[in-house]
Length: 141
Image (cartoon, rainbow, N blue to C red; front, side, top):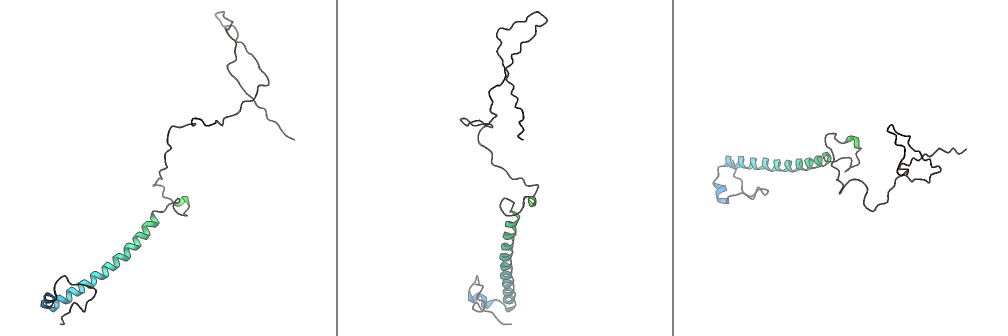
């Protein structure tokens, strides 16, 4: 068996001196060099696999909001959290309302109640308290 030297194996620096290496039996040196070569190959393979895992993890983390995938491809088990609104529900102070616009009445009917069983028929004030607005449909021919 031949004795390897540190200069023959440039990819691995020995953790011990040249004198200790030369005193190591040839079979041990050969086995140690074989193991070191295997270790280097495994480390290279690990780096390659790590790149592949990172790439695949990036694909798994994609949703329809972070890529051009359709929403139907999103997982039904992972719900996206929406940002909550700040403050109370409803209209905001100072904002103009957008409800229906009441028109001027075209006809006013004052309806007085009938006399009740006890004999009272007069009301103190007869002010209408309910406005009902009906808008009829107009056909343009």
